[in-house]
Length: 116
Length: 112
Image (cartoon, rainbow over all chains, first blue to last red; front, side):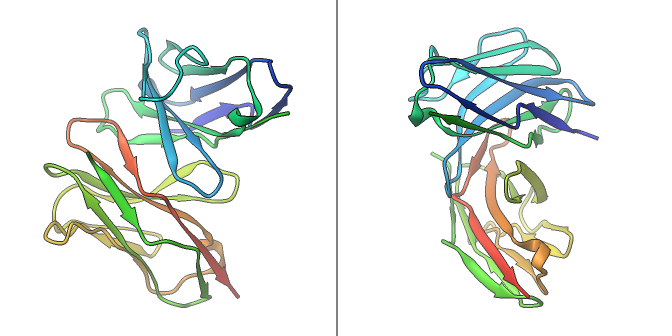
């Protein structure tokens, strides 16, 4: 149980285009999901906290107009990187918290974004 | 603010060697402590956790004890295998919060 999927697992796009990444909790409901960014050989940097039915809370320094987060249902959150540039290339990981559970985060497998 | 400090890697060990990865933390109150493992190209998987002082978390031969007096949560395994090669992250979660604070990660390579 407690499986989180991400789609796509990797994506290559041209500079200036937008990319949408989906995060789904497959067998549980998640009122809270998190989006992280991981640079090569570095730790995870929390980008934002996504709560179902409300606006995401962004960490300091993360541009909310560039990284659009939508958490429209209890099993789906999306991250859209708008007008992507090469510096946005990274590994994006989401996690989901089981609704009503003890607060443990279950992580998705990550999405590798490469912007040319 | 909260922080987690891990020993710098990479760590290279021969199969069946003893593993220790040090982790210390700074936080107010009594956080929960975690070790996560990330295999190449994958997301994070929870390896073990401890929620209060002197708790020992264990899984797959790995162990870590919550030491409040030294604010540490060192990861140990008595005999590593090639399949243990991965990046290990120490993390804490403050009571009442869902947010995790991660260390920088330690890459472990186990050679036959």
